[in-house]
Each structure stands twice: as structure tokens, then as C-alpha cells.
Amino acid sequence: MSELLRAPAEVKYAEELDWLESIDDGPKPFSWRLSPKMVRLFVLGSERADGLDREVAQKWFGDRSFVERSIVTLASDRGLLLIGDPGTGKSWLAELLAAAISRNSTLVVQGTAGTT
Image (tube, rainbow, N blue to C red; front, side, top):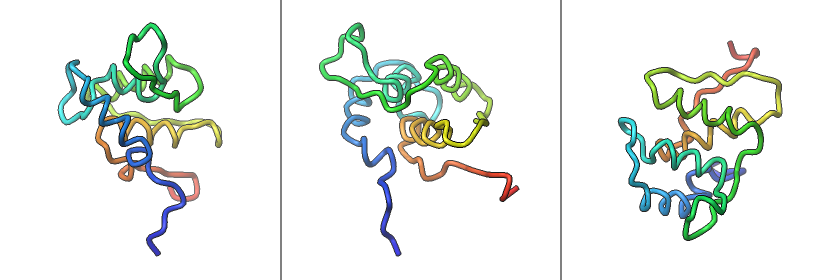
């Protein structure tokens, strides 16, 4: 059975990711499709002060500095482990970051107490 319950973020937001990539002139870490600035914009959405031609919808709602710290961590040579209570958006944030960084969120590693 190859039916998907929900399209991956890189499919659902493909047009937006293409547009962000086309206007991105910032430095990118090795093998990243977008600069950290554009990854942040993709996840947290745009504001009027950004001065963009079009609006980028906010996809993750929560502590903005947490997203920024996550992006900085991934841009370094360190890994990122998201831990917390169920239903707090960890998997969704991981999918959004993977979609923006590599355009492939299907390679996200997940684990639970039941699988470790």
C-alpha cells in the first residue's frame, strides 16, 4: 500500500521552498539547500519587516528562540535531539527543518521508549 495519510512537508510546501531558494543569497552550510536565515523564515513565517514580495506562512507555533537555537545547532558540526512531552511539536519541527535543509524529511530518525 503506497497511500500517504499526509504529504511530507517538502511536497506540501514545494512552491514556497522553491521560491525561498530562488531569493536566498545568504551563505549556506555544506549540503544545505537554504541558508539558516531562510530556514528560519520557512518555519516561523514572515513578518512585514522582512520586506518580502509574498507572505510565508508560519508553520510552527511555539518558542521562536527554540527554533533559532535548533537551526544554529544544526548549522554547526553538532547533532540535535528534541525531547519533551508528547504532542509538543517535536516531530513536526524536525520534519520542517529537514524539509528546508535537505528537501527530504522522510529520513528523520525517530525513537520512543518502546523502540529503544
